[in-house]
Image (tube, rainbow, N blue to C red; front, side):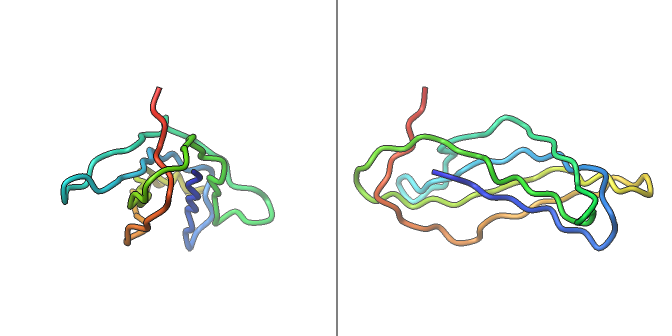
Length: 103
């Protein structure tokens, strides 16, 4: 399973730090299926207002459908020195025939 996160600001960023997770529905409640380690990524010269986190993977095995959604929270560090809180989620849960494997 893969989680993609993009930090987009209207001003250039130096870098963004996030903590992200994948939630699932169990007994009509949201629970954390997997919490990723905190990540920090730099912006690039071509797109200084955008930072991508596209390599967030967790193993899953084929099985019954489980509903998941991604969430991320953190800070964007702007080139002008400001620190801006960022957070979002994929809003809706999506059912997939896959169970996240925990170690």
